[in-house]
Length: 435
Image 1 (cartoon, rainbow, N blue to C red):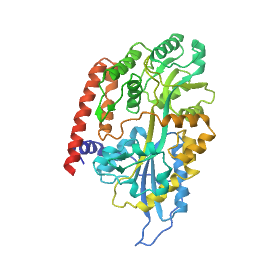
Image 2: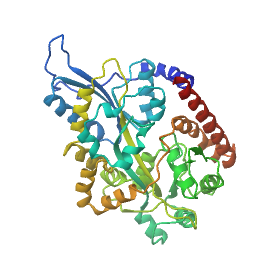
Image 3: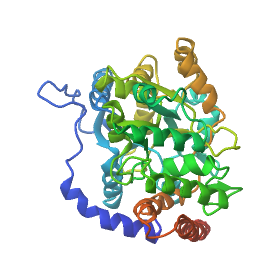
């Protein structure tokens, strides 16, 4: 493990004292107990850390795990569902204690693979399961010729807007360009009832909004393996966001309120426009059933082609002192089986990562069918770069500095570019030294 990761893990290890122990798959006295096996043949154990996507995630996964253990009494699954705000702290603390999870639901993986911490999923998943995945998503989870992760859920990003606020402001259609976005946000602001454009530059989502406006200017994070963070296009994209804020056309707290919080503000009629994923269609109407909303494409700089941006989360398996690949394979076959996986997708509002589920659900939902087609052509985060996690962590410090004039967008991106290049050189050197 490289020195930077060790240092970060050491700093986080103290957080273990503040965290609850791994939760059993179900709480309460009614939890079924796996059948006891002879001492010389104990049950296989899978410690599974899952990300909390909505209020439905925990009960959904607890029920699925309970069902699996009833059918497989020789396998015990210790499930912990963690909010994204503390997910990194939980698993990095576990790694620092040399007790990593057997299975982790995350959005990054190559820095773990670079440190030799992950199992090759080809040694775990069945051939039948591998055939189920969309090849393009599976390819994103393949690094240096090994399948260190497998896709779990995916989404495309769009602009969502409050139709009632648009009507009151005399706006007939969602903005497709930056100039239209700025004009519409100004109309909403002048109406006095709501804020215009919701911008998330918090730790949770700053990498997403940077992506939208890098790509929307014709730029991007990386090209041909080289970081392009401080390109003129990216500087222009971040400058546009900064100008929107300084002109009062965004929400008041871009570096404080998260995407999920902004969705509630929009649902409550205090925000007109924001960018989010497919899950908006499921999560927000649950809390605001009377909300009138619609969606459109992510706005781009005038003259730039429309963009598709996709996100996918994955599952990884860490090497542990009790890794049971047969048990993991059996659980993953179950997790992606029908109707289990369909229930996850429909209840959380994601796009499926398996082809058969995509075809089945898409045939009954034209919007999902179109989104799945768009996902095949989408741009994604540079997750195959081992330094991506460190780049994201550093980017999370940029929001306040840029919005409050501590540094210019160009200065901020120059610093991030320098960091990314240094981190890339360090990790390449580290990888070569291991061979």
